[in-house]
Length: 251
Image: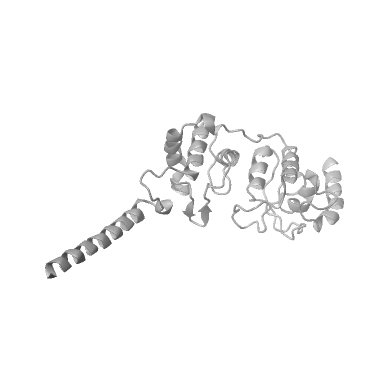
């Protein structure tokens, strides 16, 4: 009975929300109204999920293909919304980082609504200042560099892209490690402890503005290209020396 009443309430909200834009509309400042307008078509009433392609098209004119949100908690909702991964225009596409269409208040309202759908983990509060950059490098190399590269600038996988982490906040990194967005595996605390996670985040923060003790970083594109540039400079210098010596002998 409750589910039927909830469905009826959402149905009444949809006509007003269908044409709404983030930041505008009667229900735009409430989590349930935003959910009805931008999430329900894929994630279903009360976050129950939609797995059937025969589901009626929602307000974004999409056939629902979203997972259930019951019990995912504030952690997952905060990650997907603050990174702009959601809402997704096409449920078949890989989520990519983009500017969120929602402001901070709307994100907070949506996160609170999703968290109310079932008991789940809250938004983490990492403390990278307590981490160790050196340990973080070792942990990142072991668990993350295979996809994101050791410099955290991302890479390409089969039918997917491992995003660069240079725009990721400490909270977003902590969330991603625990929830495993898209194809990324999730790492529970028995695999990567909170203390280790602090070190990983500390390393990623350092990697955004690393030291360049060797001087010119050449875009930090790796040792092989950097070596080729060095050889090119050396070859030009060698040719120049040969020309100077040759002219002296001609005299």
